[in-house]
Image (cartoon, rainbow, N blue to C red; front, top):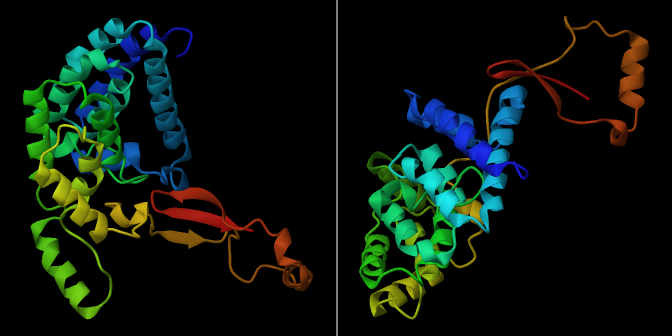
Length: 275
């Protein structure tokens, strides 16, 4: 991808986007491509996905001296609205110089609901990636685009589904956990805007949210729990098949010599674990 970036983007990107966009179940397919613990159950698929991302992102970084070629390659896909495609596009758009500020900010505004939250929220808060685009390009875009972007950010709505908010209210009332349902996007994005151009409303809101989320680490803002479930089984074919000698060795062995959580996938939601 470093030696022939144009070939990789020109030939690989259309095929990848075609596969991604053909998925019927968008949310399930997004999980397949972005879930950070894919490796646990499907090692080969995980290596393939990580390899594709790595190739595309590294190829995009090679266009420092030829940004026009990169933008021309990306232009046919600017209207794609699949979350995974938008995630890839945002990473590639970051490689453009600031003379493309209007085009990048317009891309964010053409589908703000998902593009202002296009990060991989299995690995980081989903507003981090769009925040990088805003930080780089908002200082140089047209005033009209900047004003629309600022208003869009301020007016981003609730971050959770309506049906789940009642559950979170009740959980907070009982003291189980203190989750939020609004303000996270503004917390991450307002501070990335060019502060020489923002309104007093943005400044005030940003200060309030800084106090609201003070002390919260990144995992607080993840949309998905990093835990997982499934079945763990022993590699032994039948129970009670170890000899007395093997049991004695197992019990007396120093625990530091064990390699814990050594797993192999056995099915879609089953792994074999041994030490």
